Every structure is written in C-alpha cells, then in structure tokens.
Image 1 (tube, one colour):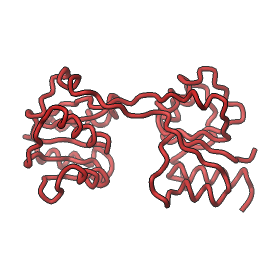
Image 2: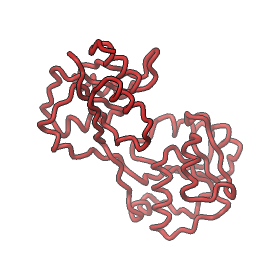
Image 3: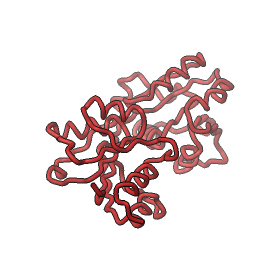
Length: 249
C-alpha cells in the first residue's frame, strides 16, 4: 500500500531545511507532527524534598537542552545566584552552545563531550574533586549513573523535570499510513490514549532498540527501523520505505 500520510510523534522542526520537509515535497506525502510525550518541570519545592541545595555543588552535568532549561528555571525559583566559577560539563557541543542562552560563554568554565555520555568521562575524571549535580529527568539512561559510579566521583542526580504522556484524544478518528516513534514512552502513550489500538494497515516506524522492544511487547508489527545499514536517520529510513512502496520518482 502506498504511503500518503505520516505522523511523526515529535514537535515540528523549527528549521526550514529539515529533511522531513524534503521528504514531503519530493514524494508528495503529508507529514504531520504531534508530540506523544512532553516534559513538565518539577517545582522547586519538590527539588528541596530531594535534599538538593544548589549551593552545595561546584559542577553541573548537562545531558540535554531540557536539563539546561530546567536547571536555570529551578535556580531562579530558588533565588540561587549562579556563581561565575561554576563548572559545566556538557554531553555534546549542541548542549554547550545552547548554554549560551543563560551564561556568557567566554567567561565560564565549560567542558564538552563528543556525543555519548561516556565521552565526558575523561573530563569529569580530570576534575574528580568537584561536587557534581546532574539535573535530569525521571527516565535517565542507565549508562549515565554507571559511568559516574565507575569514576568514583561525588555526584547526585536531581529530578528537575519529568516525561509525561500527552493527551491525544483529538486524534481518535484520525488515521495515518505511517506512525513514527522515537522512544518507548511514545509507544506507551499511544496505548494509554488508545488502549484498543489496532495496527491493521498502519505502518510503524521506530528509532532505536529500546523503542523497537517496547513496540514488539505491545504486539506491533515493525515495518520501518532506524538506524539501519544505509539509513542512520529516521527520515532516511522513511524515505527509503516510501520510495519502495510508492514506486514513483
């Protein structure tokens, strides 16, 4: 069956040159965006209940842009004046660049990894006498605490925001040829909103092994998988599939 409509379970890209728009224009398919999950901040009162005093830490570890936003939100709520000598350890360059939204980059001590959290390990080890705070989500990747524990540094995780399933009730009678998922929570959100969901002719696209595992556990048939040989991105996997089933150039 040809693909005419795709629903991507993420926010719409803010950049004009997104590969999703290229996919839409090249293959004349309708691509919609709708987050199946969203992030909600944890109030300062709950942060204090986690026995976290921002004054006790000399270094902050950021694993995402969300962690940056919510650290500075909580700092403001707690009326904590962020010291100029606070050290920042960012998992990737994009996160470090995003940090400029809140601090003057050239005046701060910022250490940047390559991509994976483990890439930060040598930098953190170099400053092992610091007291590290990891402002993060309630769904932390297992490799993060494992890496920090192996380094034997003084660190603490703070749950500064939570991943919440979105209300999708307005999609009840809307059907798409392809649904694209990027996290296990996205799959859970689908079934929370639509417990009686039947896949039928809907094609399911998943990104990553944990998302694949969740989809299979819910009895879904996976038609499109990324990353895969030759298609490291979701857009690449979608385009390859659309090109095969639509059979038009």
